[in-house]
Amino acid sequence: MTYQLKLRSGITAFALVAGLIAAPTFAFEPSQTECIAPANAGGGWDFTCRQVGKTMQDLAIVPGTMQVTNMAGGGGGVAFAEVVSKRSEDNNLIIAASTATATRLATNAFPGNTMDQVRWVGAVGADYGIIAVAKDSAINTLPELLAQIKADPTSISVAGGSAVGGWDHLKVLIAAEKSGITDLRSIKYVAFDGGGEAVTQLLAGSVEAFTGDASEAKGFVDSGDIKVIAVLSPERMPGDFASFPTAREQGIDAIGANWRGFYAPGGMSDEAFAFWQEAVTKVYSSDEWKGVMTQNGLAPIEVSAAEFQGFVEESIASIQKISREIGLIQ
Image 1: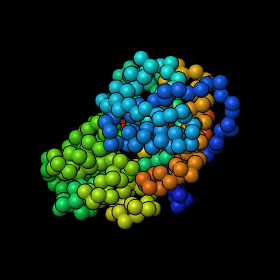
Image 2 (image 1 turned 45 degrees about the vertical axis):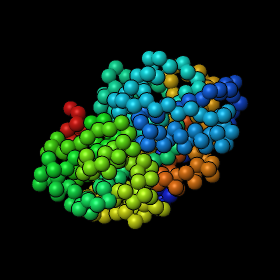
Image 3 (image 1 turned 120 degrees about the vertical axis):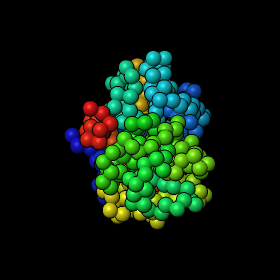
Image 4 (image 1 turned 30 degrees about the vertical axis):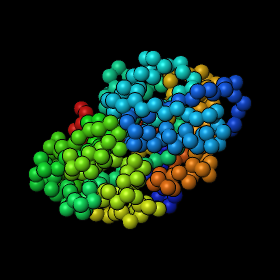
């Protein structure tokens, strides 16, 4: 089955076909719910946990406030290992995931762990990648940045919130390859535990560029602290990102869509798993969540509970193919 992800404008990028699950009666009743964000505060996983948790609370899907636990390390590997080894039967736990998670699994970066050790709950949106520099940078376009990297790779360090070989790293490598850079290993990528920390280092002058996603950069865009030089979407995004050019319109055919969703412990009961599938579906279809998506540059994504496992499998296979093509894995 081929899945599709669609922009509101109707442009098909990478994706999913919709299907909403019917609302069953659950034997499971949640209590002391928790969402693990596998990175420090301020990044995309943190955004996913906090915004979805708040929406679940506002819609009275969960009782009280959902606890958000930041568990950084290993590009999500520390959290994945914790869930598999110590919390495999926790019915009140969900964990933020994304294309970055699939990338780490695709490149065998979670030693001893595989996607079938957890249960894949569902997706709530898609983030298109961006490449940005500090507001006072002399670099104004993506071709300028890549030309400087090509001329002197040591002069540019690019920060991202995923580990080396992770999705943020992969995005800048895809753009570099499309621009004609052949020695991709010469590109200096600096990994941080989350996009928020990566942008902070950009603003501190520790690095020259940032690769991440629209939602995690939104606050810095609003404050004017960073300058977005390329959005990795098929055409310009709506809303607050409409003024920023795509890589494609600058002559570099690079597209990077990052789905956002959740997995759950592998030993979670069927009743609890069905509850969380329905909870995520209710969030995604709500007017409250549509507002969050619009405000934060998220693109629509629709996937049924039954399809999400297959979607993640296809996502991993696609990333493995790209990673082999650019030399990240054999």
